[in-house]
Amino acid sequence: MYYKFVLAILFLFFVLQLQPIKAQDTLSTFADLVPFVTTPDEVVDAMLELAKVDRTDRIIDLGSGDGRIPIRAAVLFGTHGIGVEIDAGLVEEAIINAKKEGVSHLVDFVQGDLFEMDFSEATVLTLYLFPDINLKLRPKILQMKSGTRIVSHRFDMGDWEPDETRKIVLPDGKEHLIFMWRIQ
Ligand SMILES: C[S@@+](CC[C@H](N)C(=O)[O-])C[C@H]1O[C@@H](n2cnc3c(N)ncnc32)[C@H](O)[C@@H]1O
Image 1 (cartoon, rainbow, N blue to C red):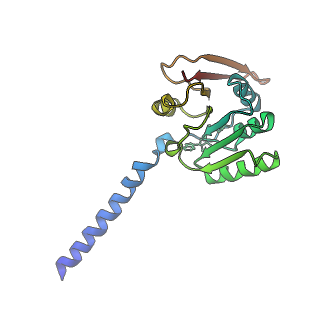
Image 2: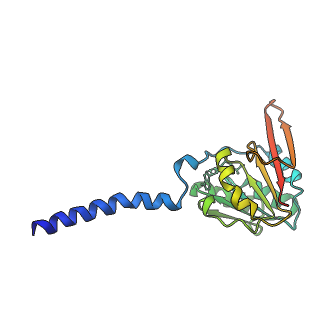
Image 3: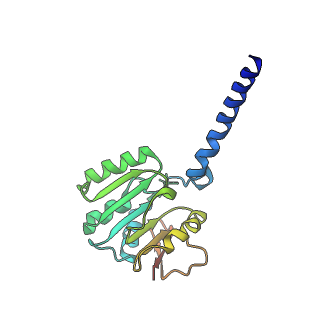
């Protein structure tokens, strides 16, 4: 009887110990989480211009926050877009913003981990993440279709030489760098 009790305790111990480890295998770690900081509107417009986005593109924003990048592309050019965002509250906000701008039929926002996302269908991929996350994305980015443009606000891709770089100076004097790579 006593040994059954000990076995039950051991079983519970292992189940409770293993659960968090399993979760971390599939989701990004906390170190990967980038805080929500918005790309200013002028910089969003410059990113879309640099990538020469038009209505035939399919834009995907990894870590889409309040949805401003896909929403702006839909408003300006009628581009179809998707945003993936880990924070459910921000996904709700993006859906409301798309409705306000009248582009709900063009954009989708999904709650999830960008590392789990299949973004191979994008012709334009936008990023405002962290340098180490950009580096982790490189193997998947390399498999994207020829002609796909990757546009990153602020952070580069390590030793990948950008095809174009632009510096935007806002009225408050703050400087914003944008990098663009075209998949060969
Ligand atoms: C710096 S903000 C950029 C927001 C928006 N793309 C923009 O440029 O205004 C980064 C966003 O990525 C989200 N994020 C961080 N880690 C993520 C992950 N692993 N999967 C999906 N979204 C993530 C954050 O919640 C945040 O909203």
